[in-house]
Length: 270
Image (spheres, rainbow, N blue to C red):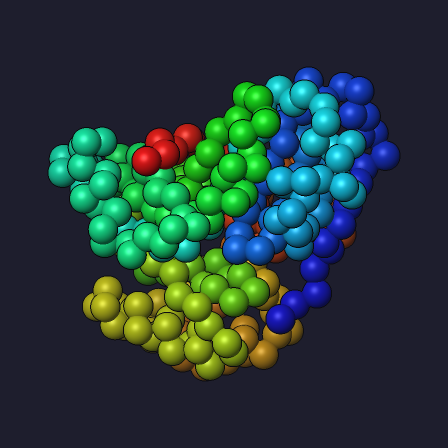
């Protein structure tokens, strides 16, 4: 929907010094994005890389052949369920997994999502098997990053957060500082996003006329989607949370979900 910078490499990047760097990878179905950071500065970024590059790297062979200080893999997941912490038990992950209709080519993982919830989710087995060769790695449910980032920025009860991907929109809502709602929906066009936004606000018993949408991802102020949303809600604002030092050509809200990986913790595989 919006024009974004999908490839960037800083002139100071030196893979001979990779042991000082963190490698971030955001894995989706069929593709992934990677980035290299030093402290809080982004040194390299590329989106829409083929999953085959994780299992049998060719174009990214040099990038994946060095040792990093830390590697964080964030998986968007093919499905998930939230479990209250007081009900969660690692011995029951198999029972929770039955809610996800797990296929033969999928694996189930679980982790702490926030102070009150665990998340159990499924992801494609192919990229999971391909990351076994990486050392010092953390595997995480990618949404944990954006939830953590929003929580640290004092979300208002009147703000509903949207993170918009190429075909999936995520919704995050906090009430009195606690996570009240997280879900994601597949969409085909701007009308779908407006529909799901209205659906979520109705479920949360919020009034669109009093609700501020804070948006990140694949959206800009000049987009058709932005204009559609402004017709139904009190206000629509770009998410201003910045987690990394970025070059001028990369807007923080465009890679909010990716940058938030740095806040993720690890998952336990079933």
